[in-house]
Amino acid sequence: MKLLIAGLVTELEPKFETTKRLCKPFIYTGERTADITLSVSDAYLDDLMKRAAEGVTREQMENFAFSVEFNRKAIPFGTMLVHSSALVCGGGAYLFSADSGVGKSTHTRLWLKVFGDAVHILNDDKPVVKLCADGALCCGTPFDGGSGIANNETVPLRAIVFLDRGEQNSVRVPDSKEIIRRLYFQTVHMVDAATADKMLKNLEALLKITRFYVLTCNMDDDAAVTAYNEIVEDKDLQI
Image (tube, rainbow, N blue to C red):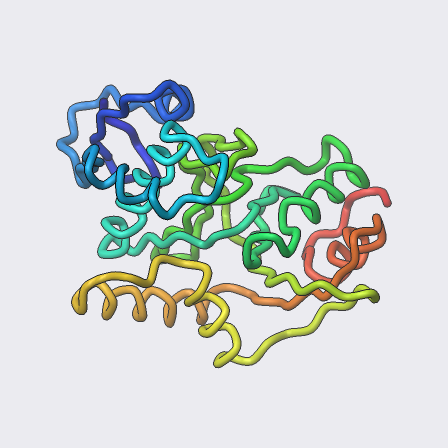
């Protein structure tokens, strides 16, 4: 099947229903040839399953494997994974990024609790950022971290927020070195030399056109309120 992901015509043939279901909103019926072709072999899945956490199914691993392939091959097109929960607020996307287990999904769900239908989650684990001439876009993908939230939606990227756990809620602006370090660990980084060079150029370009924050937060509703007050530009929601 052909999909349109972040403007890239992507060809793949999933075997399992999970990936087929998530791909449906992205199906492409136009005449463009594929920009990216993805292939996941049984041997590759076998290898991944040997290293998988307990309880991960082969069906779930197929979706993960396709995401890894896509995110590597999309780098030369100015497109990059940011491991995050992508929240849409006021027509723009805010990416909340953290290591697994820190609570990025828990945090974005606080926004849903506090702000209701005024916000929604675009992708809860594997959105991509596409660099454009006039800014950056956050694009949905059919790749899922287990929540099932993987919408076909493209919105302007407003900010990337790195999460740290803490007792008190606060927001600060990191310097360039910290941004690069944190971004590096939240994107694809096991690539060949040529792709790595392009990846670094993508990171440098993103640094120039996007706002970055570090949010230290607890798991109370006030964490969402603090983040909203500090990072959202057009504050028109009722708190």
